[in-house]
Length: 241
Image (cartoon, rainbow, N blue to C red; front, side, top):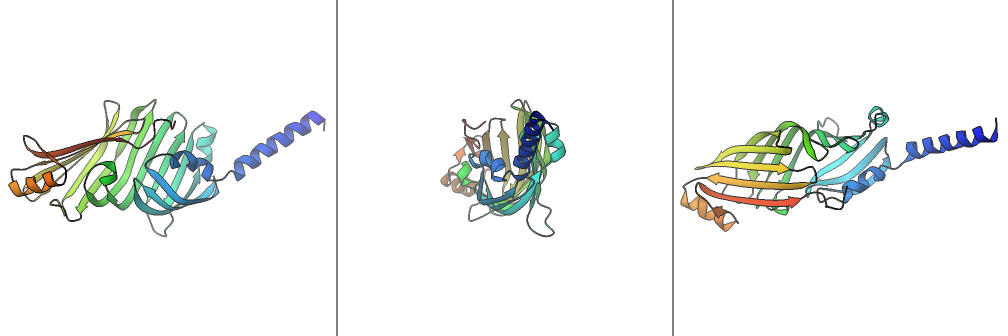
């Protein structure tokens, strides 16, 4: 074997070893710079790793395991499949980290969530089934899945259940959850852009003076049909690309 072929073979072998042994933390580094994701520890390689004590938008969602999809990698797409690290659990997600499409596919998750860090004074139990939010060139390309929120805590809306589905609307990922509380029609709307900007709006259509007073005391404002509260934020820092 010539020296040139030997050097080429060593370079290819080195590249393969780097890919095979690359740590999972290499994939999660970008996620760790966002407001939405956190993990107490990341171990293993990109093909079979483990994310310990993950938080999503501040909510603890347990420990997850997963790895890269090699076929997608050949096609130029970095797809990270994740599954909850608990026997019998159907909680899962596929993260699209690089390539033409970016976002999340088929997210199924159950957790308690405090929406206060996102700007809404609400807490609840969240159930997501096959939720997708995929963006292409910053525009919503695919959306779907069912969203359900049961409000808990000590607020006047305690016990209300809201549900809805996700769709792409005017290049924006959008979901509208509807439900009822005693004496009120409730709507929670969520909109997200490809750059991580989001808007949440909660409204309660009611004429109940006690309910209106209780919600105004928690930060809602009066409107023509009852009360509402809107907040804007960003899940991904502007510098993260």
